[in-house]
Image (cartoon, rainbow, N blue to C red; front, side, top):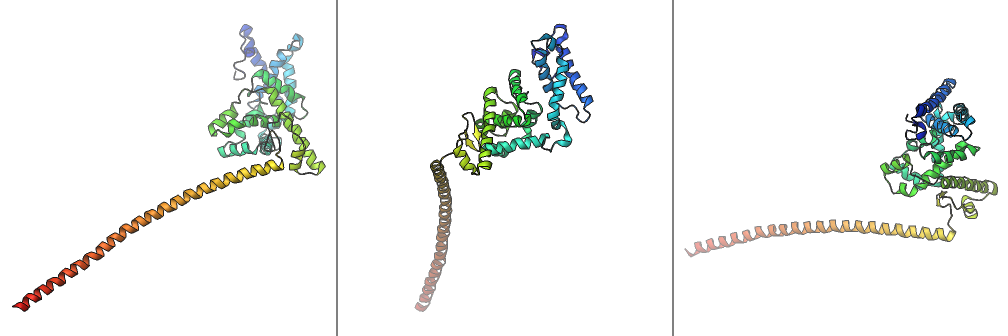
Length: 330
């Protein structure tokens, strides 16, 4: 009952239809787990099976809709052939395991948006905090059901579903980059674990454009024998790209613009250094002034103390002369 608890499809009261549909999902998962001993049931599988069953049970062809449970099992089993390693703990750190896929996703994020990657690291947010759910449920919990179905249409049409998911997940992070960069740990985690509503078509187009552009740049560098900077300046990025190779919109700056930007950065660094030196000088002069005040106060006391014994000695001498004169008179 935790699967799509707000979906009317699973809440139909007539003839207990909602509960019967839940029972069909449970049977698919139970039979699959029994027939695949090496992979136990893992939370997340239920989201995948429920989404498949919803689509098949609502087929416009009633004859086909009646076979939704069997068709769901067949599609789920076919899908698990490609992604079952995600659910096997012994394969967590393999390239096809959950940690391996997360590492590949974070590496792709580091390549195209290192600023966001470094910010998340500085905030203490590990990729597993949000991407485990993204990958194990195929993003079915991040979007409303119609958007999930639209996303899956493109995923099933892809010849490499793992690659598709990696680029979509990275694009999702980059879509929130402005909010993430100005947020702390709690806000960043909340954004990543509760992905805000977005235009799925735009998300898909941006992720596809990123993959195409990266392929073009890689081909130019390896086959054309040119540097990455030359490739970025030669190949125009698609308009839908958000970030690519650390560049906004994937647009590389010209030599003059890079020099101008470096000049601005140098001026800003110089101003910051000057401000720091000024503050240090103020602190130094303040300490010197305090030391001078303490020295002057101590010097005045010393001079006063030095004068006091001399005055006493002079008075004693006058008194001795006075006594001698008196003695002489007698």
